[in-house]
Length: 175
Image (cartoon, rainbow, N blue to C red; front, side):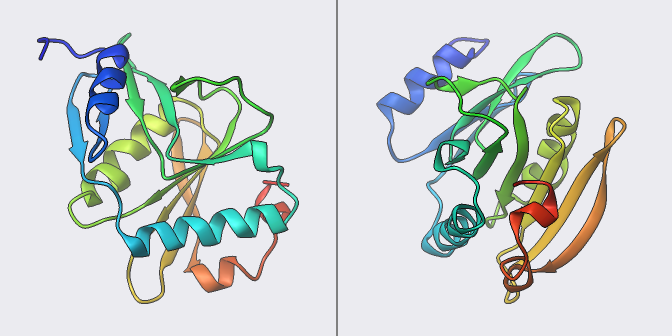
């Protein structure tokens, strides 16, 4: 492995290993995660169906697509949110720019709590992504909705996933 891992290196690593997801922070910290479990996948599917039924075009929503995350000190990282919603259709690519992203969703898995709730929160805010939702895999599948306020996220609401699914994407500025 090279001493400094680039996004091209990460792409090659993912192509060679279908059993893990690879991410890198803008500062160069490599994260290797196993594929998500069944409960994680069901939460992502429920949110995708909710978005589609709420009128968000299918080509504006994707699971597990890489985002190119600029660093505060010139570095570039690559993160793979569990769900991404864009304002418009994107060109095909492995590491897409965050410019048109409206929302990223991270579904917290055991072992990823710190990265999903602290590290990525700061990186997504620095990338000017307007909304960042965190979904816990607790009994209520608690969703914490963050909205960008200046350079940081502020909690807008916290509610069970079932409550979110009884709203519409438009109510969350996603329609």
